[in-house]
Image (cartoon, rainbow, N blue to C red; front, side, top):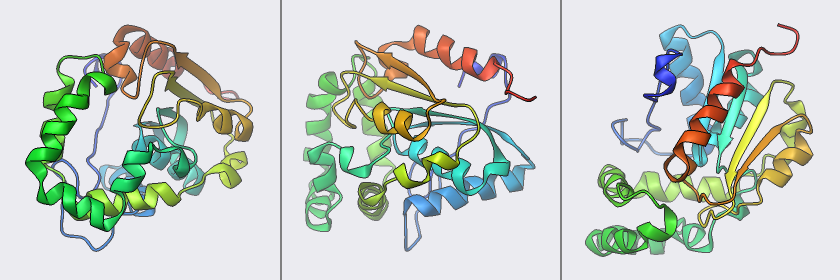
Amino acid sequence: MAYLGRYYRTYALDFWGFGESGKKRETYAVQDFVRLVDQFMDRLGITRAPLVGHSMGGTVSLSVAIQYPQRVSKVVVVGSPIVGSSLAWALKMAGRRLIAGLLFNMMWGFRLSMRLAAPLICKDARFSDMMDKDLSRTTLESFLLSIASLRRTDLRPMLDQLQIPVMGMFGDKDIIVHPMQWQPLLEGVPHARIERYPKAGHFIMLDDPEPFAQRLKDFLDEENPGG
């Protein structure tokens, strides 16, 4: 955000149930977040813009581009599942009510285990504190229902509707989302630009920040074909 903010007006929003957004909803499905992005752009008067999404945010961004094509000029996905079954086994299990309930009832243990696992997920020393802060702002229902919805998502049948520039950025050492998810993206969107990072995991922007930021900016700087 800080880097791109030097060149573009940038916006970030927390999905419902996460961060500083509202947490009193009955559903926290991928489709709810798709509508949230559309409403967010409408309220702020953003007619059309590029979308950049990490992990589930990228799945949502692609979905917005498919369902509201007039909204999106380009889309970038970072370590995002195209097919929900590509989520790590442990994360898919956490999308089941019994297991999610156990995790949240023993939040101290969950947060401790995440701190211990942090070096395997991301090389940045700040990551464990960042993840701990995020977990402290997340509710059981939003965590459970969003992961369960993401697990059921499969964008492959709709990818051929995308005519705009698309870029997928994937870390070869990702243990959260299968690192080969660039393949279904490229199969569905043959014109997509794929950037792979051999030494990065799920959080490419932290594991390999300078190449990540530069390639992202280069893609955003390119003019769309046809204007």
